[in-house]
Each structure stands twice: as structure tokens, then as C-alpha cells.
Length: 398
Image (tube, rainbow, N blue to C red):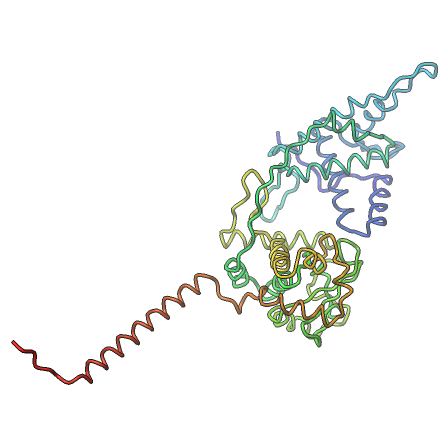
């Protein structure tokens, strides 16, 4: 029988306070959202195990899974004060191990959501090894912070088995693929994609851009990203290629300084997910649906545009230079010690590597070479005909 999961778990006040605390500390919508998704995934597991949340609002904790109550009994078995009894960490870890195994399997009988208009249902999909570890980490923090159930890392290492993460060599986007993607995108999304390729921004960072972030009078055009809009909560600067600027300018017309170029809901996590979905439709249309072996990850992804920039910038100047512009890791302090003029000059040296429309792919070069060769052969034949026509007729002796 199909097990349908309601749209939202009934989070109690302690849960919500914990999520808000995460947001205050990280200043990141994404961190809060991932923590909440981890909680909901754990709820789905608990319901599958017959240990779902209470519906009695009068309970002291209000809407907590029966599984958590069981954890509390195992962790604090209320022993005789005269006799010490150790917490049953093994039982808790055994359940958490089942939680890991649950996420590592596809559950077609568990429906997460239903789209009535399209008549489509979304079932519980197998999670990637890295995602499983991330969700588990949040649940471990949740148990400690909200329910005072403290599990040592040594216990997890000994009692919980995580799926191995097979690492395959990533395949970079090619110039030819980028051209096809751009040619088949709407003007607004083409603008977004050119920004990603030429600046190295994350999708979420690009979606926060306003006219105030972009300095059109400078050459190259500089972009200033404010700390509250970056994943690392660090302010940084990057640039846009001349091609990207051409795509951006029409969308700046009529906008207020603080008005976003790309109309969004305001929830960046949801907006990034929406862009992922739209790019997924385009990927399907173009036939770029190949995945890495043994992985749920597609080879062609919207986030590959940032990787394209990082590769080009690293090859041209250094990995540290690329990190300074795309905000990855290991900021290059020397880069920010350069004068604005020196920084701009470095990007000018990099810019030709980031052009898309102005550069021909190898197949185009090959065609041009063939055409040039044919032209040369035709010119030689013409010269030979002219020479023959100008040569006097000679009588050949018998």
C-alpha cells in the first residue's frame, strides 16, 4: 500500500527555535533549509518504522516522533540512584544505522508530494552518499541540541555504516555544449548563464544581483557581491565579460538600484531549486541526460558553468586567483593587495578564455581549414590554367 507523506511535518516550537538558531549563526537560508529537510527526511523514516510524530498538541514536546521518545528512554533509562546504568547508545546507533540504510534505497511506495495538475507523484528517491552524510550530521546535531541526546563520533564510526562515495572524474562543460545551451535558452536565462560563465558566481549569488552590484562604467565591468549574499558570508568582487554585459544591459533598463535583475521569490534556496528544474527541462530537450556511473548526478548541470569559469581562471592565472573571484576556498590575499587597475588587467587577460559567441568550436575551425584548402587549390588551378593559356602552341616533332 502506498504511503503518502504530507506536505510538511508538524514541527514543534523547539524544532523551529533550533532551525532559527542555525540561521542566526550561519546567516544562510540554505543551511536552515538543509537542516529542515534533514528533519523531514528523518520524520519520513520514523513514519516508515511506525514511530511517527504525535498529533496531541498537549504533550510536553508537542509533535515529536515516537522514535525520539524511545531514544530518550534508551539514553536515560531512569536507573536506581544507587546503581549506575550506562545509556544504551548501541540501540540508538542501530536505529540511526537503519536511517542511513533507508536513505540509501529508493522507496517507490513512499510518495513525498503529488502534483494534481500534472497528475504526477514524487516518490522517495535514493540519496547520494554525500547527501546521506550531510543529513545524518544534522540529525546528530539536532538530537544533541534539542533533546540532549549526545552521541560521540567514536560511536558513530563504530556502529553506523555509511555507503562509500565512489568518485568519478568530472567532465567539464565544453564550448560547443555552452553554445547549444545558450542558443536554446530564453533571453533572461541566457543572461543568467553568461553571468555564471564569465564571473564564477554561484547561482544563488547571481540571483541576488541588482543594478547597484554592477559597475557598468568600468572596464572590465566589475561586480561587487555583498557578504550577506554570498555562501561564505564574505564580501568579494568579480567581473563580467563584454558578451555577458551585452546580455545584462537590456534587463537593467528601468530597474531601481536595489531591484533584482532576476525576479525571484526572495527565498534563494527555492529560487536556486527552481533554476535547477528549469535547466533540467532544457537538459532533457537537448538530450544532455547522461549521468555519472553509479550516481544520481548529471554530467551537464547548471553548476557546471561555475566550474567552467574556475577551470579557465585556474589555467590562466592560478587556482588561488580563481578562488578569489568565484569565492570557493583559499582566498588569495595577494590578489586583494593589488590595485583595482591591476585586478582589472588580470581579468582582461582572462576574458578571451570566457567568450562564447566570439569563439569558434573545433568543428568550425576544421570546416574553415577545409574551405581554406579548397580555395588554395582553386587558386592554384586558376594560376595553372592562366599559365597554359599564355603559353604559345608548340609543334611536337614526330
